[in-house]
Amino acid sequence: MDAGSEAARGAKGPDELRREIERTRHELGDTVEELAGKMDVKARARARADELKDRAGAMSVQMRSSAGEVGKQHRTQLMAAAGALVMLAVGAAVMAQRRHH
Image: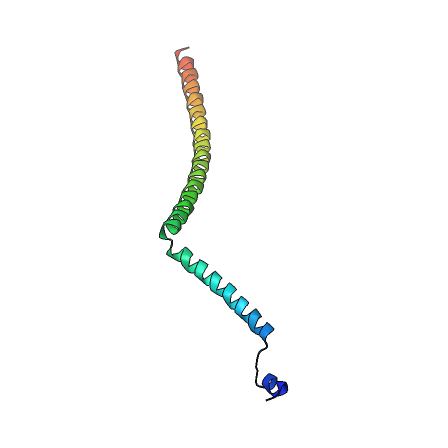
């Protein structure tokens, strides 16, 4: 057989085989790392716990912020109601005093 017929059948040269072997080793290394990560239950549990803790912290901040806004609204409403009661009391006192005179 000559080199032309080997190339026609898809034979690979030594350099191409080395590159393919190196690529396969790299892919295998990535796969092993990925599998090792999935098998590390403690690390996965810690990562999940950290994620949940971050979520809880964000929700806590959001709830405090919302509660602060609700509190401001209620304070404003209470102040308005108190002002109205004071005005009613003053008005009632003035009317009562007029009746006595």
